[in-house]
Amino acid sequence: MAIKPRYSSRSSFFQIFLALLWGSWLGFSPTWLSLQVLILLVALIFLRLPWIWMMTSFVVSWAMGAFLLDPLMDQVGKLLLRQPALDHFWTEMAKAPVLPWLHFNNSMVLGAFLLGVLTIPFWAYVAWNLRRRAPVN
Image (cartoon, rainbow, N blue to C red; front, side, top):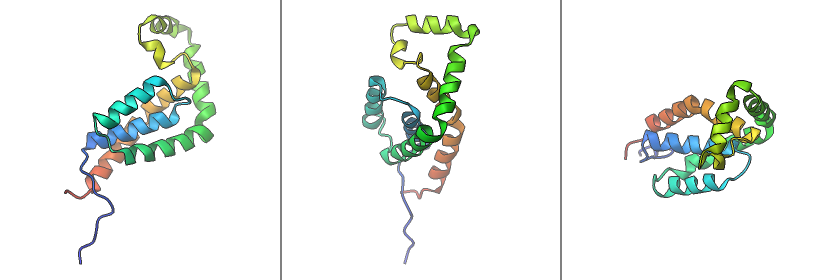
């Protein structure tokens, strides 16, 4: 009798990585912005990201972000927005045609984005490990 694997994945490393990263970014974000919803639909429909990994990282990130890291994300966002050296950067970003839709003038959104960027190596390791352990179909 053959042992049935826990899961099988036909997704590539990059698809799993993007699903984990995107789910965590949505989980850390304080609001559902229209741009996030649009990119989420594009990611699920056209990139065919595995939604199970996206939902898993979303739930983990939301639980951590909403309850543990919320004050830290706010303080980091405020620190970046109040840096005199970055005033010109924030002004030019606000003048750009599409960039204001990203809401980086909100300290929580900026802090959540930075936290999401800092988790890239972690999610890359998790995706590599998941892909390595998945049986080949």
